[in-house]
Length: 156
Image (cartoon, rainbow, N blue to C red; front, side, top):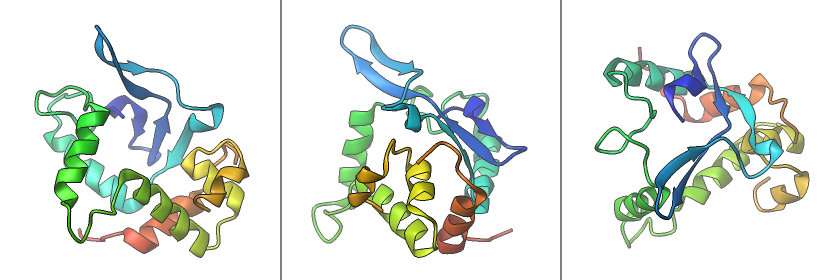
């Protein structure tokens, strides 16, 4: 994501890009997702908006929302490596980026969202994929509210 995909006035983010490493070209930001369902605009919970408000002050015009050390796009492989290093090989070795998606799906399910709403939040094209987690593009505000209730740290 970059700052152009964030709508601070409407507390939402547009998901429509991927970062790919292309041999001979390096990292490219391409306008496509894995499926049409992957392209979506999501409402953001209050805790995410507060984090973004803090980050925008420090952004200094840097385009990527979470840039690498040089201000560019983060290589997906490097990000996976950094997560592995952060979790270590002990007690938290089971934590992968996929676990965060599964946790989100579980929280939304436990909060009473329908399978369609959960699939929409995750960008799944159909409900079959929820067998691994728990749509369409029209994501409601209930997803942002459920995440805020479960994970929000309300500090002013």
